[in-house]
Length: 43
Image 1 (cartoon, one colour):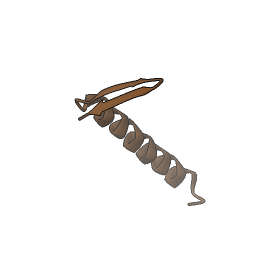
Image 2 (cartoon, one colour):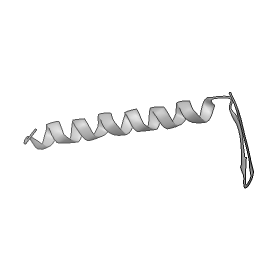
Image 3 (tube, one colour):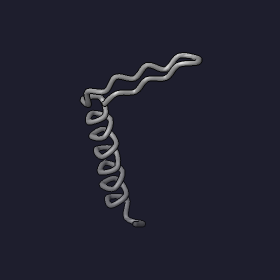
């Protein structure tokens, strides 16, 4: 991993994975209500 090109490719893959997970998480139909004393989570 000392080659700069390999490091850049690895960082890009990690970034794509994180963005993909965040997109997936935002597309899930989940209802989450979290207020003091009451918590409701439905998926």
